[in-house]
Picture: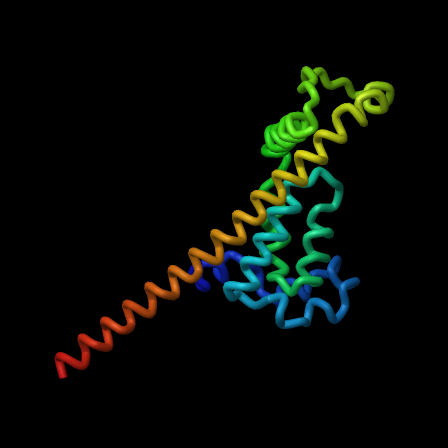
Length: 177
């Protein structure tokens, strides 16, 4: 993972600290570890952001920010990754989570017949909610762990390639001298 690529798309600490709605965080935004772009901070940010993007809950970004602060992950990257689940991707993503949960709990997948009424929601909350959350936790844990491992691998591979290239350049410059 090239550091320059990530830096190009993330907001600067100064920009984040100047946002009025984030002032309630106080000195937390001044913590330099939340802005580091290194293998460990970025991998933890992927772990947190990807995990929360698969969990159907309100204020996913707030939860991701809290855990990024708690685990010293890159704060803006953790929050941005939550947007993998957005209004376009949420229905298929959460339906897949529901199907995984129903399969794990050995329950039949209910036909999709949504009705926006309190009676429908109260009747179906347990029938749909339990498999949805069980599946969401399973899928979130799998993909968050996978993203963590992939980021660690890609970052190390990039560092090894850079070292190899640097050694070849140095060897070539020594031979030409």
